[in-house]
Image (cartoon, rainbow, N blue to C red; front, side, top):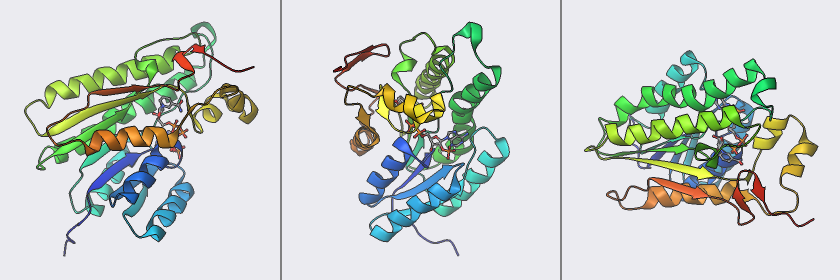
Length: 258
Ligand SMILES: NC(=O)c1ccc[n+]([C@@H]2O[C@H](COP(=O)([O-])OP(=O)(O)OC[C@H]3O[C@@H](n4cnc5c(N)ncnc54)[C@H](OP(=O)(O)O)[C@@H]3O)[C@@H](O)[C@H]2O)c1
């Protein structure tokens, strides 16, 4: 027998750390069912257990590698079953940057991984869940873009290319879904202190130095932007939120104290 869900549901990709994990905690605190995916399943399980201990919302997790068609297909099937078929929000958050090499020196493998995750990964998941969401009374797709979707910087060519591409996909979705009760939002942060720079630089000391002498955004700041977009009345579609720490004016323009 299919159980009847009493919670609203958000599916979050890349929920094992940073913005995805903070968003899961915030929505769960507001009573939502959060369905979480990422590759590091032990981190997901520990987050699920923390959330479920609070007893307000509800959390479920499944393994997910957005670059694998097989993994995406299985995850989407499990996510739909876990929420008895009702997905209110899909948050395409899984993403990464790798390295800061110039085009003349970049790693082909890193470029593949960034494009496969940030662009094709979002397409894979959206292609799997959107036909289902289109049959529901309403829905909301929220994509985690970046200021790198608007601006470029030396050493950031492929990451910026991936976020420019994601922005094109987000804007196209808004056109294609026009007339349906499905909102499409892009959240575009500047510097947020998460595991992002550790992954990018593969060096924890260098990652720490990225945020030295300024107060970066926190994952919780971005979770608040996501929640605020979702909490608007159903006829209000927040298209984009571009958000930076006050010390940042562009990817390469950052005021630091000492
Ligand atoms: N931090 C910033 O300054 C910043 C600024 C602008 C935009 N963003 C964007 O914000 C999003 C979240 O990043 P974050 O800052 O929270 O960094 P983070 O702490 O490194 O989190 C990235 C998340 O993505 C997941 N992920 C990476 N590859 C994946 C894959 N193939 N399949 C499934 N999940 C995958 C990671 O989980 P697993 O490793 O466990 O799979 C992790 O949960 C990204 O799209 C990033 O581009 C970040």
